Image 1 (tube, rainbow, N blue to C red):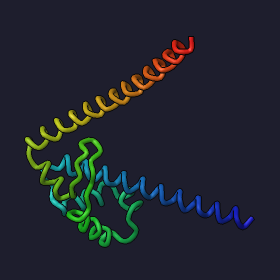
Image 2 (image 1 turned 90 degrees about the vertical axis):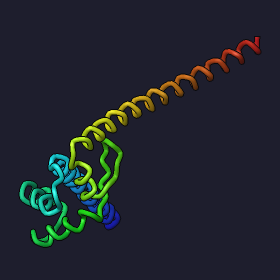
Image 3 (image 1 turned 180 degrees about the vertical axis):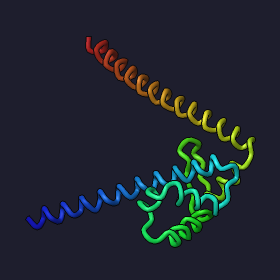
Image 4 (image 1 turned 30 degrees about the vertical axis):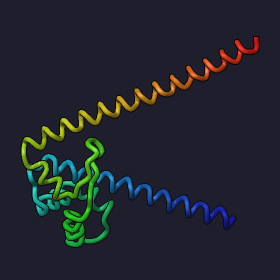
Length: 150
């Protein structure tokens, strides 16, 4: 019985940790969207947007009073890198904000995302082709063995 309780407790802790990671990831995506749509938003505006418009998401990740949370978010502005899944780029929130502060950067970003998707498509096709080639080689070997045995 005690072993089951320990196992159950471990599973609960893992589940809670996984949920916390998911909540953090969701908050980071929200933070990135605010920056991307913010036309060069500064740290104070970004923190205000997060706390004001997404309090549930912020509170799910950070425990404490709003002043402490605001300080924690402010600390992450230059110290925390966010990797954008669409572009593959990783920068601090402040660097992302500077990046998205002009129209040219948006065009570069959009082009990078398009090219990355195309590259990923090509990688998938290449992997598929390699698998098909491997299967063809195996069939050829089997035919060669049959021919040699006749």
